[in-house]
Amino acid sequence: MLKSAFAVAAVGASLTFSTVGVGLPTQSRAEESAIATVLSKHAGSVVTVKFLLAMQENEREAEAGGLVIDPAGLILVSNLEIGGSIGRGRESAQAKEIRVLIGDDTQGLPAKIIGRDTELELAWVQLDKPADKPLAFVDPAKGVTVKVGDELVAIDRMNKYYDRVAVGLELEVGGLTTKPRNLIIPSGGPLQWIGLPVFSEGGGFVGVSVVQPVGGDEDEPMAQRNMGRVSPFDRGLKVLPAAEVASATARAIEAHKSGKELGAEEAKPAAKPEVQPGEKPEGDGMPGEKP
Image (cartoon, rainbow, N blue to C red; front, top):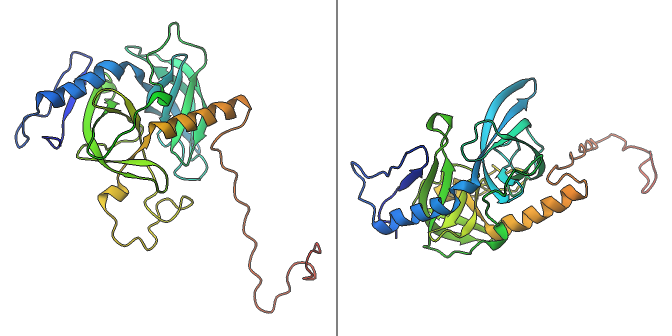
């Protein structure tokens, strides 16, 4: 069990800190070691994706967190953070002029979106050309499984004001579910943002934080039909397991190679109006006959 409700450490920009203070018990050495272990192994694979987000006639600069999952420059990002929509909806905005900031780079390398999976809340960004040297990366296909009670560490990067320092966030596995798909339910920690890579205390890749439907169905992801009691865990972020991330990535790559656009849902045809009492249906009403 965790000995503190919240534990955090950061590396980079000469910044290292933990939340040991008023009202919070002191962390154990083991807890500090878990965060330090994960940051030392994987902070280099967590990057920042900068872009212009175009919404109707407006554009604004935006950033998203990213995880390098291939040394040639394939980056996993949150679909929502890079302009996508929840569930099966169409993209709600367009990300343009994408650049990936790696390490101390402040200019970024040009990249493009090669696929989205709106149901799993994932997107993939590929560098326009490979980096000068292989990048630090995490292979989702080599992820680890977890059980209830296991301790986890998520990695995030702070914003430009804090020099985008990498930060470790401590949590644990509160539960596991297979509906609506395989998901890890985090507990006991501050998992409050989407697209964060999550690792075991030994540094194995566990998955990535995602938004998932609260209730109802995925066409209406925020619906709460006859749900009764809705707990914070229902509304909170989930962790999509590494195996699901690996499978989705393979589908995205295959779709991109074949020229398809993974995750771009077709618009649903408009429903035909119901025939009102006394009205004649289209055509002469005979089955199989065109109007």
